Length: 106
Image (cartoon, rainbow, N blue to C red; front, side):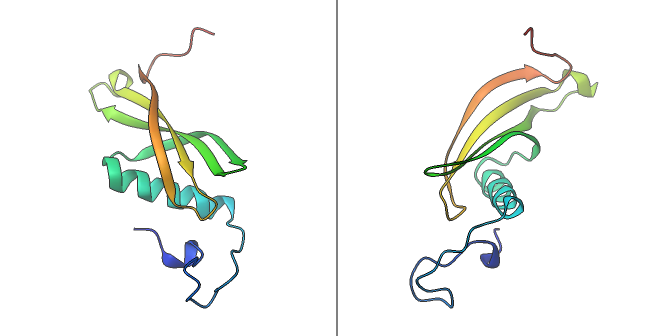
C-alpha cells in the first residue's frame, strides 16, 4: 500500500488542508509501483520513461508477464502508467510484449 505520508491530503481535512506540496520523483515512482502491483499482481522491474505532464505524471514500466527458464525467454511487457498530480494512478495500458532476450529492430 502507498504510505499516506507520500500522498498529500486533498480532502481539506488533514494537516495539509488547502495545500498540495509537490511530490518528489521518488514518491511518484514508489506510488506508481505500489498501485500497479496491487492492481495487476505484476512487479515492475524497471522504468524506461518518466515525465511530468500538465495532468500529472506519465511513466513506462517493464514487468515480467510470463517467467520462463532460461530467463532470456521470459515474456516481458511495457506498460504506460498515468498518475494524477496527487500521485494516484489514473490509468495504465500495455504498450507491447516481447521476449526478454530480444532487442528492438530500430
